[in-house]
Image (cartoon, rainbow, N blue to C red):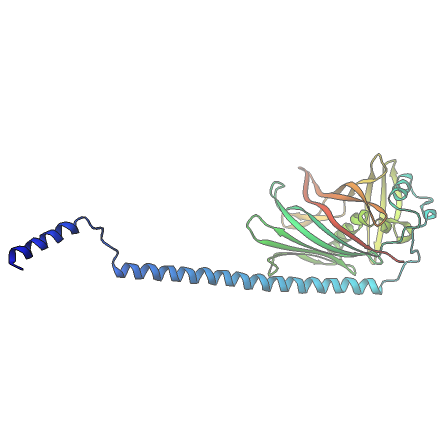
Length: 320
């Protein structure tokens, strides 16, 4: 090849190179691959950590809840069995007319007395200003030989986290414990006195789901307020609580109120008027019980609902 041909080939190669897109330098490729690899490691590490924390939190929460359930069962076994094992219409004599009508409507003659209850709920909870409702699902066990319950709920928060809430009343001790993924406890309360009073009031209000617990033979005392309202009083150990039950035109409970329950106001527990409304009655275990309920605080600024639920399952343990 002569000199002119060689120069011609070099000129052609230079001309072609002007139209070729240059490739990334090997050093840039290695850096990109290295960054992607580290990103994958970080993502998988975070996922693994979240999974471990979630499983740990779930196990911790279940263990604590099972301990409360064991205490509830132990209390129920040790409690003395009331003399009456079945509803007798004769015990309605002397009760306020509205109460007689209600109990005669929701109970069948010779109805067995409910001793234990298992229920499941779905609904929504508002932990703020009444506008941001978060869905929840809950399971609850109740005993009536001595009043007690364990309520275990999982709330799907707006932040994408699961908030566990456990509310209990066992052997005169009340407790309310929220927890993030069952691992990080947030506030909460436990004790006797006002803490326990709040939870005994809840048990008493929810007796419309196990209405044999509202019979005089089960320790409830009734007093007439007016034609459509009656005051019910229940004592458990050192605690005595009273509620007002309001009845609708069909003789069924539609509203339950208390002035003894407490809520947080400016960082302190303050006794605040409280109400539960119930509706949509259906028959379970031979008894007529409401399927939907809403709880609200009656604040100076107005009514503030904070809990809405409907029953998904309701099972009773009845004496044979």
